Length: 111
Image (cartoon, rainbow, N blue to C red; front, side, top):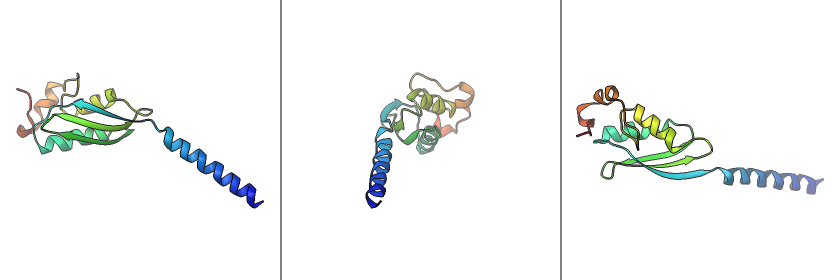
């Protein structure tokens, strides 16, 4: 009986471990326009609002958003759309002018 319980526990652990290993985490970079620390917060929050995004870090100097995400749950395109909706041009998607124009003055990055 003890061996049966141990065998079952081992099988359960292996199944759980395989499920964790099969999570399809991916890394990606996305060009995102921004100008200040408020932009950084807005961009990162927009990206992290997408289900499946584990982390998002935007750098003002490079204008690059670095992502860690589960590609079984989301895609770069979904993140692009969320960031563009927040007022920031993301990859090949441009934020609509109305949303961009509503950003604070310090956040205007278009020339």
